[in-house]
Image (tube, rainbow, N blue to C red):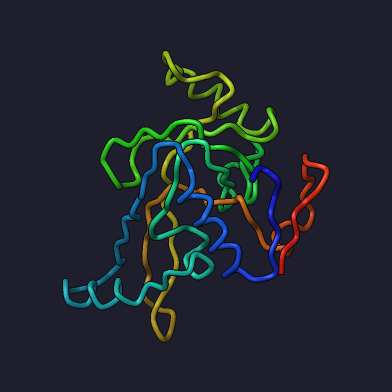
Amino acid sequence: MDVPHLFIQNQKVNEFNERVHNAATGEKFSIKAIDSVIGANSAQLQDKILSQIPNDPRKTKQIASNLQLSVGERTEMALNVRTDDGMTNGAGNVVKKIHLNQISKPSGIIWVQFDYSDVGEKTRHENRHFYVQGIESTWTPIKPITTQFTVGRNQTAQVVRKQFPLRPASAKTIHRTQGDTEQKNCCKFQH
């Protein structure tokens, strides 16, 4: 299971990642994004716009509506969070600890260990006050981010989403792996 699985279609990637998540033995979390609408004059308009948000991260700046994670699960950064520290879209890691301030909400810290020790080095140094008993010095804190995207027929409604910038990565599309250096000798390719 720790060999990267490559698929041609996003649907197959999602199905495989879901199977891996369901089979995971670590503590599991379902983290629901917090969405809000910019400039909605009424609660009715806001609800209408929120109902139009697609459940496809490719249409919401790569940030999931409902992030399913478990300790020990393989993930990657879903977007560029800190390019000067290697915390860029696709940076692979393993979830080590999940500490939410509010259950099921994007709050607190998700601790990950990046595949390469230099990734997240500055972030670890700047957040050293968070390293208490039970937190290893090689783990990097990932905090929720906010991003903005448009929805609606004319793509004019502005939505702000708060969520952790991670996505499951036990499987990827071949397209997404272009330029990656895999640490394993072989990838499992499936149609």
